[in-house]
Image (tube, rainbow, N blue to C red; front, side, top):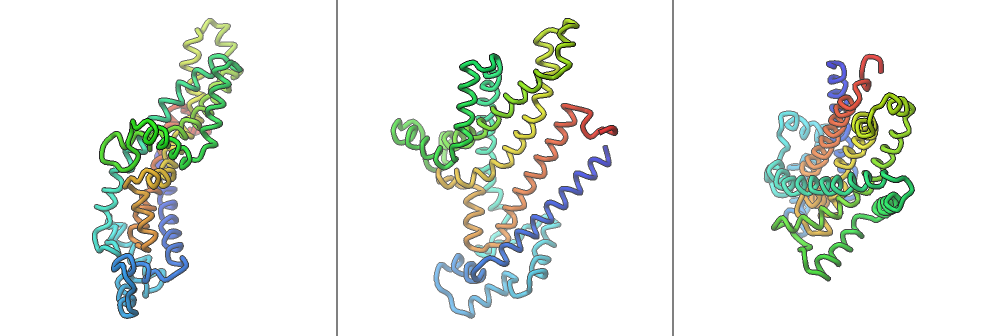
Length: 312
């Protein structure tokens, strides 16, 4: 177990280090003058060369790539994300404010996905090839094919414009979260429904199940103790990945619904070449991916102790 934990920690360190270095390199080598982008975002006006030189020195752009990267990453190791090169404020409080809008929306979308996908998959597998099964497959296929931005616009037209039931823009009340959560959650539900349906059907074809039935094991016990754990393995994998990739979908959804959050935080930071803010947003996203993968590994071992065991 200690060996497994050490391997997971080492993998996390490698991923986070590579992410930080790659992101910094992409920003550093992006077209255009980063000092000019920072100055325009800071002063909102064309600035003389002297000011550009001052901005370049303040941001460490004249020190070279590796000295600038070292100057940024050294305080980060002690939990200091630095100050914004545009506003001069600490990055972490602004990041926390953005995350406070993004995380509840991501969790709400995941709940929508689970509430829709699990009953739909269970109903579909009750009678293979029946109208419920065909309907579930059709709904899941359409849900996967529809882009999030188009689904979001359709929901705005229906529930906000035509019916007037829900607000479309902003994040002032909990009602403002319903349409964005539905936009993200229905896409998640489509993927989870397909995976869970396939997992249940595959589990029911396992060769040891007829032997259990001949021994008198009831259908409910077989479904609960043998089919469900087998079907849960791929479902847990996709569920974890969907939670991580929700951050990607949030970029589009937060723009469509004019919500503050991590997406607008990152987009504005990229436009202004605000290196500390971009790096902070990317690293937080990378940490989410690493933590999600760690939880997936632990869930796998809980569902099937043979995974990662000494004989694996």
